[in-house]
Length: 198
DNA sequence: TGAAGGATTTGT
DNA sequence: CAAATCCTTCAC
Image (tube, rainbow, N blue to C red; front, side):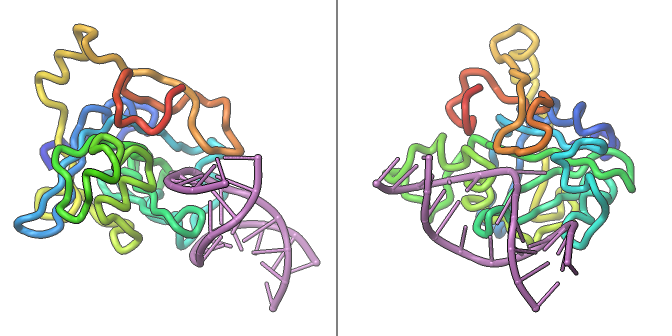
């Protein structure tokens, strides 16, 4: 990972906005590496009724309680997977849901006629589908030697944020029944790859 | 052991 | 707006 590991060992509400603009790397083989610009994230943290770790540690959510720099992957609605980057200190149930990425290049099995490239990973379930992320990766570490990795923002992206050429919007999270009023969702303004507006 | 429900997506 | 679809969690 091109990021200092301690960078993720902060509260998810700090990590989530900082992850927007970073790259998610999926290494499927030597020849097939997918890179996606993270454009939308959500934070889940202790004391948050929507957090899977809100009640207690279970076999499903145990990865969230682990150290920062690993991933928490779960199945939702019986048919989609969602990818989280585990954050904060070891023992703290904290993670950042990656809700959307903008893929640099499409994997060869995706037909560009079916859907525009900027929409194929617009949504947490869709990005896991197109990047072939499932529960077999749950609790796996991020890193240069691993099938999942993270790269920091480019200098140019950072500068565009600072000059206002890119804007980060903070608002409420999507699809929840609890904690609906907590504004822990961040996305890149005017980005076509974001799952939903608002 | 059973039932309710869910951090979604898609099509009507 | 409702269905698809099944795993997890909690109650009895």
